Length: 543
Image 1 (cartoon, rainbow, N blue to C red):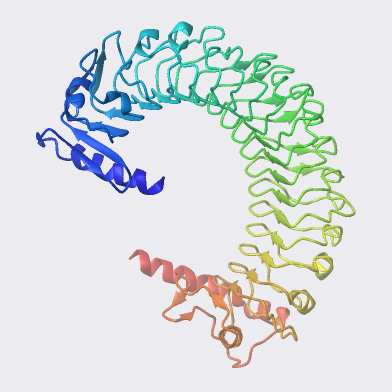
Image 2 (image 1 turned 180 degrees about the vertical axis):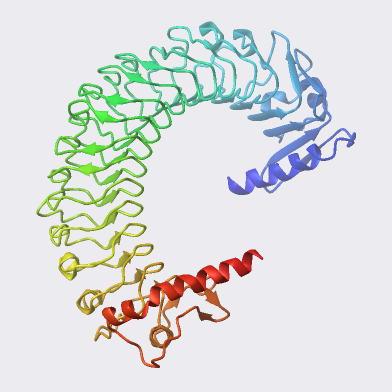
Protein backbone atom coordinates (compact mmCIF):
# COMPACT_ATOMS: atom_id res chain seq x y z
CA UNK A 1 0.00 0.00 0.00
CA UNK A 2 2.87 2.41 0.80
CA UNK A 3 4.48 1.88 -2.64
CA UNK A 4 1.13 2.43 -4.36
CA UNK A 5 0.47 5.70 -2.53
CA UNK A 6 3.95 7.06 -3.18
CA UNK A 7 3.80 6.27 -6.87
CA UNK A 8 0.42 7.90 -7.28
CA UNK A 9 1.57 10.92 -5.28
CA UNK A 10 4.53 11.44 -7.63
CA UNK A 11 2.26 11.42 -10.68
CA UNK A 12 -0.30 13.75 -9.11
CA UNK A 13 2.38 16.15 -7.88
CA UNK A 14 3.90 16.32 -11.38
CA UNK A 15 0.67 17.43 -12.95
CA UNK A 16 -0.27 19.87 -10.17
CA UNK A 17 3.11 21.59 -10.46
CA UNK A 18 2.91 21.71 -14.26
CA UNK A 19 -0.34 23.58 -15.02
CA UNK A 20 0.63 24.10 -18.66
CA UNK A 21 0.61 20.40 -19.47
CA UNK A 22 -2.12 20.10 -22.07
CA UNK A 23 -1.63 16.67 -23.64
CA UNK A 24 -4.70 14.52 -23.06
CA UNK A 25 -3.51 11.05 -22.15
CA UNK A 26 -3.57 8.27 -19.62
CA UNK A 27 -0.38 6.83 -18.16
CA UNK A 28 -0.46 3.29 -16.86
CA UNK A 29 1.79 2.17 -14.03
CA UNK A 30 1.97 -1.58 -14.44
CA UNK A 31 3.88 -2.09 -11.17
CA UNK A 32 0.97 -0.94 -9.06
CA UNK A 33 -1.87 -1.60 -11.48
CA UNK A 34 -3.12 1.99 -11.58
CA UNK A 35 -3.79 4.56 -14.30
CA UNK A 36 -3.48 8.34 -14.12
CA UNK A 37 -5.29 10.40 -16.73
CA UNK A 38 -4.86 14.13 -17.33
CA UNK A 39 -6.88 16.90 -18.94
CA UNK A 40 -10.10 14.98 -19.23
CA UNK A 41 -13.28 17.06 -19.06
CA UNK A 42 -15.75 14.29 -18.31
CA UNK A 43 -16.41 10.61 -17.83
CA UNK A 44 -17.25 10.59 -21.51
CA UNK A 45 -13.64 11.58 -22.28
CA UNK A 46 -12.43 8.86 -19.95
CA UNK A 47 -14.63 6.33 -21.75
CA UNK A 48 -12.85 7.13 -25.01
CA UNK A 49 -9.47 6.43 -23.41
CA UNK A 50 -10.49 3.36 -21.43
CA UNK A 51 -9.00 -0.10 -21.79
CA UNK A 52 -10.62 -3.23 -20.38
CA UNK A 53 -7.74 -3.95 -17.96
CA UNK A 54 -7.96 -0.54 -16.20
CA UNK A 55 -9.54 -1.06 -12.80
CA UNK A 56 -7.90 1.74 -10.76
CA UNK A 57 -8.19 5.20 -12.35
CA UNK A 58 -7.11 8.65 -11.12
CA UNK A 59 -7.95 11.83 -13.01
CA UNK A 60 -5.80 14.95 -12.56
CA UNK A 61 -6.68 18.26 -14.20
CA UNK A 62 -5.50 21.81 -13.82
CA UNK A 63 -6.67 23.70 -10.74
CA UNK A 64 -10.04 25.35 -11.41
CA UNK A 65 -11.06 23.03 -14.24
CA UNK A 66 -14.57 21.60 -14.39
CA UNK A 67 -15.27 17.89 -14.70
CA UNK A 68 -18.67 16.58 -15.85
CA UNK A 69 -20.31 13.39 -14.62
CA UNK A 70 -23.32 12.54 -16.77
CA UNK A 71 -24.92 9.84 -18.95
CA UNK A 72 -22.94 8.90 -22.04
CA UNK A 73 -21.62 6.01 -24.07
CA UNK A 74 -19.94 4.03 -21.26
CA UNK A 75 -17.36 1.90 -23.02
CA UNK A 76 -15.41 -0.14 -20.44
CA UNK A 77 -16.41 2.14 -17.54
CA UNK A 78 -18.15 -0.82 -15.98
CA UNK A 79 -14.77 -2.47 -15.23
CA UNK A 80 -13.49 0.37 -13.01
CA UNK A 81 -13.31 -0.66 -9.37
CA UNK A 82 -11.51 2.38 -7.95
CA UNK A 83 -11.98 5.97 -9.16
CA UNK A 84 -10.18 8.99 -7.73
CA UNK A 85 -11.60 12.36 -8.84
CA UNK A 86 -10.08 14.42 -6.02
CA UNK A 87 -7.74 16.14 -8.51
CA UNK A 88 -10.21 16.39 -11.38
CA UNK A 89 -11.45 19.89 -10.52
CA UNK A 90 -14.95 21.09 -9.69
CA UNK A 91 -17.45 18.34 -10.47
CA UNK A 92 -20.85 18.97 -12.06
CA UNK A 93 -23.05 15.89 -12.07
CA UNK A 94 -26.32 15.05 -13.76
CA UNK A 95 -28.87 12.89 -11.99
CA UNK A 96 -27.42 9.88 -13.78
CA UNK A 97 -24.24 10.22 -11.73
CA UNK A 98 -22.06 7.12 -11.51
CA UNK A 99 -24.56 4.49 -12.62
CA UNK A 100 -22.38 3.45 -15.55
CA UNK A 101 -19.63 2.33 -13.15
CA UNK A 102 -21.32 -0.92 -12.16
CA UNK A 103 -18.20 -2.47 -10.58
CA UNK A 104 -17.17 0.63 -8.62
CA UNK A 105 -15.98 -0.19 -5.09
CA UNK A 106 -14.04 2.94 -4.12
CA UNK A 107 -14.86 6.56 -5.03
CA UNK A 108 -12.92 9.67 -4.00
CA UNK A 109 -14.66 13.00 -4.70
CA UNK A 110 -12.76 14.91 -2.04
CA UNK A 111 -12.29 18.65 -2.66
CA UNK A 112 -14.49 18.81 -5.76
CA UNK A 113 -17.02 21.43 -4.53
CA UNK A 114 -19.89 18.98 -4.26
CA UNK A 115 -22.81 20.16 -2.13
CA UNK A 116 -25.47 17.47 -2.50
CA UNK A 117 -25.77 13.69 -2.77
CA UNK A 118 -28.69 12.23 -4.67
CA UNK A 119 -30.09 8.71 -4.57
CA UNK A 120 -30.05 8.72 -8.38
CA UNK A 121 -26.23 8.90 -8.51
CA UNK A 122 -25.82 5.20 -7.76
CA UNK A 123 -27.43 1.97 -8.89
CA UNK A 124 -29.72 0.11 -6.50
CA UNK A 125 -27.60 -2.12 -4.25
CA UNK A 126 -24.50 -0.33 -5.43
CA UNK A 127 -21.20 -2.20 -5.16
CA UNK A 128 -19.56 0.91 -3.63
CA UNK A 129 -17.69 0.16 -0.39
CA UNK A 130 -15.52 3.26 0.17
CA UNK A 131 -16.70 6.84 -0.37
CA UNK A 132 -14.53 9.88 0.40
CA UNK A 133 -16.61 13.06 0.12
CA UNK A 134 -14.46 15.18 2.42
CA UNK A 135 -13.48 18.83 1.83
CA UNK A 136 -16.67 19.71 0.02
CA UNK A 137 -19.71 21.97 0.54
CA UNK A 138 -22.28 19.62 2.06
CA UNK A 139 -24.48 21.33 4.66
CA UNK A 140 -26.86 18.43 5.00
CA UNK A 141 -27.19 14.77 4.03
CA UNK A 142 -30.69 13.54 3.31
CA UNK A 143 -31.35 10.04 4.59
CA UNK A 144 -32.85 8.92 1.27
CA UNK A 145 -29.71 9.90 -0.65
CA UNK A 146 -27.84 6.98 0.92
CA UNK A 147 -30.50 4.30 0.50
CA UNK A 148 -28.79 2.59 -2.45
CA UNK A 149 -25.36 2.36 -0.75
CA UNK A 150 -26.15 -0.80 1.16
CA UNK A 151 -22.62 -2.20 0.71
CA UNK A 152 -20.78 0.92 1.86
CA UNK A 153 -18.18 0.17 4.56
CA UNK A 154 -16.38 3.51 4.89
CA UNK A 155 -17.77 7.05 4.58
CA UNK A 156 -15.68 10.21 4.98
CA UNK A 157 -17.70 13.42 5.30
CA UNK A 158 -15.06 15.45 7.13
CA UNK A 159 -14.33 19.09 6.33
CA UNK A 160 -17.80 19.98 5.12
CA UNK A 161 -20.48 22.33 6.50
CA UNK A 162 -22.86 19.82 8.07
CA UNK A 163 -24.94 21.50 10.78
CA UNK A 164 -27.46 18.78 11.60
CA UNK A 165 -28.10 15.14 10.82
CA UNK A 166 -31.56 13.69 10.37
CA UNK A 167 -32.53 10.90 12.74
CA UNK A 168 -31.30 7.57 11.31
CA UNK A 169 -29.51 9.31 8.42
CA UNK A 170 -27.19 6.33 8.04
CA UNK A 171 -29.65 3.55 8.85
CA UNK A 172 -29.65 2.17 5.28
CA UNK A 173 -25.88 1.66 5.40
CA UNK A 174 -26.12 -1.83 6.79
CA UNK A 175 -22.42 -2.63 6.20
CA UNK A 176 -20.97 0.73 7.36
CA UNK A 177 -17.98 0.25 9.68
CA UNK A 178 -16.17 3.61 9.50
CA UNK A 179 -17.74 7.10 9.63
CA UNK A 180 -15.72 10.33 9.72
CA UNK A 181 -17.64 13.52 10.57
CA UNK A 182 -14.65 15.62 11.66
CA UNK A 183 -14.44 19.37 10.98
CA UNK A 184 -18.09 20.15 10.42
CA UNK A 185 -20.58 22.42 12.24
CA UNK A 186 -22.52 19.76 14.13
CA UNK A 187 -23.96 20.89 17.47
CA UNK A 188 -25.74 17.69 18.42
CA UNK A 189 -25.17 13.95 18.11
CA UNK A 190 -28.14 12.04 16.75
CA UNK A 191 -27.09 9.11 14.58
CA UNK A 192 -29.77 6.62 15.45
CA UNK A 193 -29.12 3.02 14.44
CA UNK A 194 -26.06 2.01 12.41
CA UNK A 195 -25.88 -1.68 13.08
CA UNK A 196 -22.26 -2.49 12.09
CA UNK A 197 -20.52 0.83 12.77
CA UNK A 198 -17.17 0.26 14.53
CA UNK A 199 -15.28 3.54 14.18
CA UNK A 200 -16.87 6.99 14.63
CA UNK A 201 -15.00 10.32 14.77
CA UNK A 202 -16.75 13.65 15.39
CA UNK A 203 -13.73 15.84 16.15
CA UNK A 204 -13.62 19.61 15.57
CA UNK A 205 -17.33 20.30 15.56
CA UNK A 206 -19.53 22.53 17.80
CA UNK A 207 -20.83 19.93 20.26
CA UNK A 208 -21.35 21.33 23.77
CA UNK A 209 -23.36 18.56 25.46
CA UNK A 210 -23.50 14.77 25.14
CA UNK A 211 -27.01 13.76 26.32
CA UNK A 212 -27.87 10.48 28.01
CA UNK A 213 -28.08 7.41 25.76
CA UNK A 214 -26.64 9.27 22.76
CA UNK A 215 -25.10 6.10 21.34
CA UNK A 216 -27.50 3.44 22.60
CA UNK A 217 -28.10 2.04 19.10
CA UNK A 218 -24.42 1.72 18.16
CA UNK A 219 -23.79 -1.58 19.87
CA UNK A 220 -20.89 -2.63 17.62
CA UNK A 221 -18.90 0.61 18.01
CA UNK A 222 -15.26 0.01 19.03
CA UNK A 223 -13.68 3.45 18.64
CA UNK A 224 -15.38 6.77 19.44
CA UNK A 225 -13.64 10.14 19.18
CA UNK A 226 -15.31 13.43 20.13
CA UNK A 227 -12.25 15.65 20.50
CA UNK A 228 -11.66 19.38 19.95
CA UNK A 229 -15.24 20.49 20.52
CA UNK A 230 -16.58 23.14 22.95
CA UNK A 231 -17.87 20.16 24.91
CA UNK A 232 -18.48 21.15 28.52
CA UNK A 233 -21.05 18.67 29.83
CA UNK A 234 -21.50 14.92 29.65
CA UNK A 235 -24.80 13.74 31.06
CA UNK A 236 -25.17 10.60 33.15
CA UNK A 237 -25.30 7.37 31.13
CA UNK A 238 -24.19 9.22 28.01
CA UNK A 239 -22.34 6.17 26.69
CA UNK A 240 -24.70 3.45 27.82
CA UNK A 241 -25.25 0.79 25.17
CA UNK A 242 -21.70 0.87 23.78
CA UNK A 243 -21.12 -2.73 24.79
CA UNK A 244 -18.12 -3.26 22.47
CA UNK A 245 -16.32 0.06 22.89
CA UNK A 246 -12.53 -0.24 23.27
CA UNK A 247 -11.26 3.34 22.87
CA UNK A 248 -12.91 6.64 23.82
CA UNK A 249 -11.27 9.97 22.96
CA UNK A 250 -12.68 13.07 24.68
CA UNK A 251 -9.50 15.14 24.56
CA UNK A 252 -9.14 18.87 23.80
CA UNK A 253 -12.63 19.82 24.92
CA UNK A 254 -13.90 22.09 27.72
CA UNK A 255 -15.03 19.46 30.23
CA UNK A 256 -14.79 20.81 33.79
CA UNK A 257 -16.00 17.91 35.91
CA UNK A 258 -16.84 14.23 35.82
CA UNK A 259 -19.75 12.72 37.75
CA UNK A 260 -20.17 9.24 39.17
CA UNK A 261 -22.68 8.00 36.60
CA UNK A 262 -21.16 9.14 33.29
CA UNK A 263 -19.76 5.68 32.56
CA UNK A 264 -22.61 3.57 33.92
CA UNK A 265 -22.90 0.33 31.97
CA UNK A 266 -19.17 -0.14 31.36
CA UNK A 267 -18.47 -2.62 34.12
CA UNK A 268 -18.23 -5.52 31.69
CA UNK A 269 -17.30 -3.51 28.61
CA UNK A 270 -13.73 -4.00 27.41
CA UNK A 271 -13.01 -0.26 27.20
CA UNK A 272 -9.22 -0.18 27.46
CA UNK A 273 -8.35 3.42 26.48
CA UNK A 274 -9.87 6.66 27.76
CA UNK A 275 -8.36 10.01 26.73
CA UNK A 276 -9.55 13.04 28.71
CA UNK A 277 -6.42 15.12 28.17
CA UNK A 278 -6.44 18.86 27.41
CA UNK A 279 -9.74 19.66 29.11
CA UNK A 280 -10.55 21.94 32.07
CA UNK A 281 -11.22 19.24 34.65
CA UNK A 282 -10.67 20.71 38.11
CA UNK A 283 -12.04 17.89 40.24
CA UNK A 284 -13.97 14.64 40.26
CA UNK A 285 -17.51 14.54 41.60
CA UNK A 286 -17.84 11.25 43.41
CA UNK A 287 -16.10 8.30 41.79
CA UNK A 288 -16.39 8.77 38.00
CA UNK A 289 -14.22 5.76 37.10
CA UNK A 290 -15.91 3.22 39.37
CA UNK A 291 -17.60 1.49 36.41
CA UNK A 292 -14.41 1.18 34.33
CA UNK A 293 -13.05 -1.97 35.87
CA UNK A 294 -11.39 -3.13 32.61
CA UNK A 295 -9.80 0.20 31.62
CA UNK A 296 -6.05 -0.06 30.96
CA UNK A 297 -4.95 3.43 29.79
CA UNK A 298 -6.23 6.69 31.32
CA UNK A 299 -4.94 10.05 30.09
CA UNK A 300 -5.79 13.09 32.24
CA UNK A 301 -2.84 15.25 31.21
CA UNK A 302 -3.30 18.94 30.49
CA UNK A 303 -6.21 19.56 32.85
CA UNK A 304 -6.53 21.71 36.00
CA UNK A 305 -6.53 19.05 38.71
CA UNK A 306 -5.17 20.29 42.05
CA UNK A 307 -5.85 17.46 44.48
CA UNK A 308 -5.99 13.67 44.26
CA UNK A 309 -7.18 11.36 47.01
CA UNK A 310 -7.94 7.71 47.71
CA UNK A 311 -11.29 7.90 45.88
CA UNK A 312 -10.01 9.56 42.70
CA UNK A 313 -9.29 6.30 40.86
CA UNK A 314 -11.60 3.88 42.63
CA UNK A 315 -12.67 0.95 40.48
CA UNK A 316 -9.71 0.98 38.08
CA UNK A 317 -8.42 -2.41 39.09
CA UNK A 318 -7.07 -3.21 35.58
CA UNK A 319 -5.42 0.17 34.93
CA UNK A 320 -1.87 -0.10 33.59
CA UNK A 321 -0.97 3.42 32.46
CA UNK A 322 -1.98 6.67 34.18
CA UNK A 323 -1.02 10.02 32.66
CA UNK A 324 -1.42 13.11 34.87
CA UNK A 325 1.13 15.45 33.28
CA UNK A 326 0.72 19.23 33.12
CA UNK A 327 -2.01 19.71 35.68
CA UNK A 328 -1.81 21.90 38.80
CA UNK A 329 -1.59 19.02 41.24
CA UNK A 330 -0.30 20.21 44.61
CA UNK A 331 -1.46 17.42 46.89
CA UNK A 332 -1.71 13.67 46.52
CA UNK A 333 -3.43 12.12 49.51
CA UNK A 334 -2.62 8.89 51.28
CA UNK A 335 -3.38 5.68 49.37
CA UNK A 336 -4.26 7.55 46.16
CA UNK A 337 -2.64 4.83 44.06
CA UNK A 338 -2.97 1.98 46.55
CA UNK A 339 -5.81 0.22 44.74
CA UNK A 340 -4.12 0.40 41.33
CA UNK A 341 -2.18 -2.82 41.63
CA UNK A 342 -1.96 -3.40 37.86
CA UNK A 343 -0.25 -0.08 37.14
CA UNK A 344 3.04 -0.17 35.24
CA UNK A 345 3.28 3.57 34.45
CA UNK A 346 2.52 6.78 36.35
CA UNK A 347 3.43 10.10 34.75
CA UNK A 348 3.15 13.22 36.93
CA UNK A 349 5.44 15.50 34.93
CA UNK A 350 4.78 19.24 35.05
CA UNK A 351 2.71 19.67 38.20
CA UNK A 352 3.09 21.69 41.41
CA UNK A 353 4.08 18.99 43.89
CA UNK A 354 6.28 20.10 46.76
CA UNK A 355 6.37 16.79 48.58
CA UNK A 356 4.86 13.31 48.44
CA UNK A 357 3.09 11.62 51.30
CA UNK A 358 4.94 8.48 52.30
CA UNK A 359 1.74 6.45 51.90
CA UNK A 360 0.85 7.68 48.40
CA UNK A 361 1.72 4.31 46.91
CA UNK A 362 0.59 0.90 48.08
CA UNK A 363 2.76 -1.18 50.34
CA UNK A 364 3.38 -3.27 47.26
CA UNK A 365 2.88 -2.26 43.63
CA UNK A 366 4.69 -5.16 41.96
CA UNK A 367 4.00 -4.11 38.35
CA UNK A 368 4.94 -0.42 38.51
CA UNK A 369 7.98 0.08 36.31
CA UNK A 370 7.89 3.72 35.21
CA UNK A 371 7.41 6.70 37.53
CA UNK A 372 7.90 10.25 36.22
CA UNK A 373 7.93 13.06 38.80
CA UNK A 374 10.01 15.56 36.83
CA UNK A 375 9.20 19.27 36.43
CA UNK A 376 7.56 19.73 39.82
CA UNK A 377 8.70 21.63 42.92
CA UNK A 378 9.78 18.58 44.89
CA UNK A 379 12.49 19.29 47.45
CA UNK A 380 12.30 16.48 49.97
CA UNK A 381 10.87 12.99 49.85
CA UNK A 382 10.37 10.66 52.79
CA UNK A 383 13.01 7.93 52.86
CA UNK A 384 10.32 5.25 52.45
CA UNK A 385 8.36 6.95 49.64
CA UNK A 386 9.29 4.20 47.18
CA UNK A 387 9.41 1.32 49.65
CA UNK A 388 6.73 -0.71 47.86
CA UNK A 389 8.01 -0.10 44.34
CA UNK A 390 10.50 -2.91 43.95
CA UNK A 391 9.90 -3.30 40.19
CA UNK A 392 10.63 0.30 39.17
CA UNK A 393 13.16 0.45 36.33
CA UNK A 394 12.65 4.08 35.25
CA UNK A 395 12.48 6.91 37.79
CA UNK A 396 12.60 10.59 36.83
CA UNK A 397 13.07 13.27 39.50
CA UNK A 398 14.61 15.85 37.17
CA UNK A 399 13.72 19.56 37.08
CA UNK A 400 12.80 19.78 40.75
CA UNK A 401 14.32 21.41 43.82
CA UNK A 402 16.18 18.48 45.39
CA UNK A 403 19.39 19.46 47.16
CA UNK A 404 20.05 16.22 49.05
CA UNK A 405 19.63 12.51 48.39
CA UNK A 406 18.81 9.97 51.07
CA UNK A 407 20.32 6.60 50.20
CA UNK A 408 17.47 4.83 52.01
CA UNK A 409 15.03 6.25 49.47
CA UNK A 410 16.64 4.24 46.65
CA UNK A 411 17.33 1.02 48.57
CA UNK A 412 14.08 -0.74 47.50
CA UNK A 413 14.68 0.04 43.80
CA UNK A 414 16.66 -3.09 43.01
CA UNK A 415 15.66 -3.19 39.33
CA UNK A 416 16.32 0.46 38.52
CA UNK A 417 17.72 0.94 35.00
CA UNK A 418 17.11 4.63 34.26
CA UNK A 419 17.48 7.40 36.83
CA UNK A 420 17.01 11.07 35.95
CA UNK A 421 18.17 13.61 38.54
CA UNK A 422 19.15 16.47 36.24
CA UNK A 423 18.26 20.13 36.82
CA UNK A 424 18.10 20.09 40.61
CA UNK A 425 20.31 21.62 43.32
CA UNK A 426 22.11 18.46 44.41
CA UNK A 427 25.57 19.19 45.84
CA UNK A 428 26.59 15.67 46.76
CA UNK A 429 25.64 12.10 45.85
CA UNK A 430 26.54 9.78 48.75
CA UNK A 431 28.73 6.80 47.92
CA UNK A 432 26.14 4.29 49.12
CA UNK A 433 23.60 5.77 46.69
CA UNK A 434 25.90 5.15 43.73
CA UNK A 435 26.87 1.72 45.05
CA UNK A 436 23.24 0.71 44.76
CA UNK A 437 23.04 1.67 41.07
CA UNK A 438 25.17 -1.12 39.68
CA UNK A 439 22.50 -2.17 37.15
CA UNK A 440 21.86 1.31 35.71
CA UNK A 441 21.88 1.79 31.94
CA UNK A 442 21.13 5.54 32.01
CA UNK A 443 22.00 8.18 34.64
CA UNK A 444 21.26 11.89 34.22
CA UNK A 445 22.85 14.18 36.83
CA UNK A 446 23.35 17.26 34.66
CA UNK A 447 22.74 20.85 35.80
CA UNK A 448 23.07 20.36 39.52
CA UNK A 449 25.60 21.75 42.03
CA UNK A 450 27.97 18.76 41.94
CA UNK A 451 31.69 19.51 42.17
CA UNK A 452 32.78 15.89 42.68
CA UNK A 453 31.60 12.29 42.77
CA UNK A 454 32.65 9.87 45.48
CA UNK A 455 34.97 6.99 44.80
CA UNK A 456 32.97 3.78 44.69
CA UNK A 457 33.57 0.09 44.13
CA UNK A 458 30.68 -0.20 41.66
CA UNK A 459 31.80 -0.80 38.07
CA UNK A 460 28.48 0.05 36.38
CA UNK A 461 28.79 -2.75 33.82
CA UNK A 462 25.52 -1.89 32.04
CA UNK A 463 25.76 1.91 32.01
CA UNK A 464 25.47 3.21 28.44
CA UNK A 465 24.58 6.86 28.86
CA UNK A 466 25.25 9.55 31.45
CA UNK A 467 24.80 13.33 31.46
CA UNK A 468 27.19 15.37 33.59
CA UNK A 469 27.15 18.81 31.96
CA UNK A 470 26.19 22.00 33.76
CA UNK A 471 27.81 21.08 37.09
CA UNK A 472 30.61 23.06 38.85
CA UNK A 473 33.12 20.21 38.62
CA UNK A 474 36.58 20.70 40.04
CA UNK A 475 38.97 20.11 37.13
CA UNK A 476 40.78 17.15 38.80
CA UNK A 477 37.42 15.56 39.65
CA UNK A 478 36.16 16.04 36.11
CA UNK A 479 39.34 14.49 34.70
CA UNK A 480 38.76 11.46 36.88
CA UNK A 481 35.09 11.18 35.81
CA UNK A 482 35.88 11.54 32.10
CA UNK A 483 38.67 8.99 32.35
CA UNK A 484 36.31 6.57 34.08
CA UNK A 485 33.62 7.03 31.40
CA UNK A 486 35.91 6.83 28.41
CA UNK A 487 37.67 3.72 29.73
CA UNK A 488 34.26 2.02 29.80
CA UNK A 489 33.04 3.60 26.55
CA UNK A 490 30.11 5.23 28.30
CA UNK A 491 28.37 7.92 26.26
CA UNK A 492 28.21 11.42 27.77
CA UNK A 493 27.14 14.70 26.28
CA UNK A 494 29.87 17.02 24.99
CA UNK A 495 28.38 19.46 22.51
CA UNK A 496 26.67 22.29 24.37
CA UNK A 497 27.43 25.71 25.78
CA UNK A 498 28.99 24.36 28.95
CA UNK A 499 31.91 22.85 27.09
CA UNK A 500 35.02 24.58 25.83
CA UNK A 501 36.36 22.67 22.87
CA UNK A 502 36.67 19.00 23.69
CA UNK A 503 36.91 19.40 27.44
CA UNK A 504 33.95 20.39 29.65
CA UNK A 505 34.09 23.64 31.55
CA UNK A 506 35.47 23.09 35.07
CA UNK A 507 36.78 25.05 38.06
CA UNK A 508 40.53 25.28 38.57
CA UNK A 509 41.51 24.89 42.23
CA UNK A 510 44.85 25.32 44.10
CA UNK A 511 44.84 21.58 44.81
CA UNK A 512 45.66 19.26 41.92
CA UNK A 513 43.78 16.36 43.49
CA UNK A 514 39.99 15.91 43.54
CA UNK A 515 38.64 17.16 46.86
CA UNK A 516 35.71 14.98 47.91
CA UNK A 517 34.60 16.99 50.91
CA UNK A 518 31.46 19.08 50.53
CA UNK A 519 32.28 21.39 53.42
CA UNK A 520 35.64 22.33 51.89
CA UNK A 521 34.19 22.90 48.41
CA UNK A 522 31.48 25.08 49.91
CA UNK A 523 34.04 27.15 51.81
CA UNK A 524 36.09 27.61 48.64
CA UNK A 525 32.97 28.76 46.76
CA UNK A 526 33.30 26.32 43.87
CA UNK A 527 29.70 26.75 42.78
CA UNK A 528 29.89 30.57 42.81
CA UNK A 529 33.11 30.54 40.77
CA UNK A 530 31.49 28.26 38.22
CA UNK A 531 28.38 30.44 37.94
CA UNK A 532 30.57 33.48 37.18
CA UNK A 533 32.48 31.50 34.54
CA UNK A 534 29.27 30.40 32.84
CA UNK A 535 27.85 33.91 32.98
CA UNK A 536 31.02 35.31 31.46
CA UNK A 537 30.92 32.76 28.62
CA UNK A 538 27.27 33.54 27.90
CA UNK A 539 28.00 37.28 27.75
CA UNK A 540 30.83 36.66 25.29
CA UNK A 541 28.54 34.56 23.12
CA UNK A 542 25.96 37.35 23.05
CA UNK A 543 28.60 39.87 21.98
